[in-house]
Length: 446
Ligand SMILES: Cc1cc2nc3c(=O)[nH]c(=O)nc-3n(C[C@H](O)[C@H](O)[C@H](O)COP(=O)(O)OP(=O)(O)OC[C@H]3O[C@@H](n4cnc5c(N)ncnc54)[C@H](O)[C@@H]3O)c2cc1C
Image (cartoon, rainbow, N blue to C red; front, side):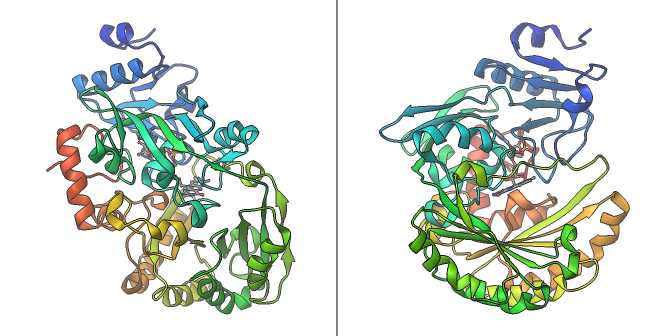
């Protein structure tokens, strides 16, 4: 029997899940965080989202908004508050085939988007995982397998429909509510709930994709050469590197260089990828032509009790060598975190820093360190991680909100440089003056 207030049951047409309900345990968790909210609300319409926002606001409940539920910082749940879980709002519609315009519900996942667009020969530069949400990934960036050619996911956004803290439904684009449109492209969930995104997709073919592995002992030279190459590699090429993968031997794990060449011309692909093959002793090379949708991985759900300590940073072409030599040294030591590096630059860097609330445009590399394990192992890893980041600090600029378990003031300052923060705070004052949307890397209205 629901204990939800009468007004909510009258105005809200979606599912209301409360403690004690059969679905509650699963509904209270996200992929990487557990919680004990008083209500998990699953809106089935924009009106439901408005009703849920009004309910949380009027009852003074802490509010969490959940898209795909993959956030590292666990913002998609809370204790004792309300969660608005957007999973039902997940339609993917090609609304204008000629102009490649696609409307996507705020709770959709990137795998569903790739599947829906494939028959049209279209794709959107997104991330590397099917189960990750369009919402969280886009609102803070979106660094995927086509990032150097087509930019961040948010660079492909042309409009959005947003429910603000007052319950108003607004359309934001370059022409309408332009400042709100600026803010949602990098400002996370700070300024409202996006019920629908409108993207301009791009034509896609099959792509060359795979992993080229090198011995761990060559990490330093392979990474150095990799960063040098990505100063001006063809923009069709995007690459991630993984070091110290615990499933492949930790410090002894091979250096895994994953590549995507965005195109199906074998000769051009080889021209772009061969310089990577020449970086060291190739142990494995499974690069092959694949459908874009097939290169996205299924997300893994960690067993209960496993936690993540994840931190990210950006480096430009000049500081990348210093960051890389530090990371290569750490990767060779026992107990190293998992280290990931992603090439950015290309189309991302052609957008001015102040054009969106994502302001890390001059970086050529985004890198991530992750410790994984039960709580005691994470606590034990903290001092070492802090030392590592202290040594990296002089060469790092900012942090990528989408790979960040922390949400301290220091983390928020790394995500939003001062000018971006102040401009976001002004948007916040206008659309969320009482900071209802605080479950995020939070920008305070005042
Ligand atoms: C396995 C895995 C792979 C990943 N791969 C990539 C990658 O390749 N590239 C990359 O850039 N990132 C990647 N990420 C990071 C990912 O972008 C973030 O974790 C992101 O926050 C996930 O979004 P979500 O909607 O699934 O998460 P959620 O936890 O649901 O949401 C995260 C945040 O976004 C807000 N939010 C979500 N949807 C909306 C909405 N519609 N309106 C308003 N606010 C909303 C939430 O309130 C919350 O603050 C990956 C993460 C994981 C776990």
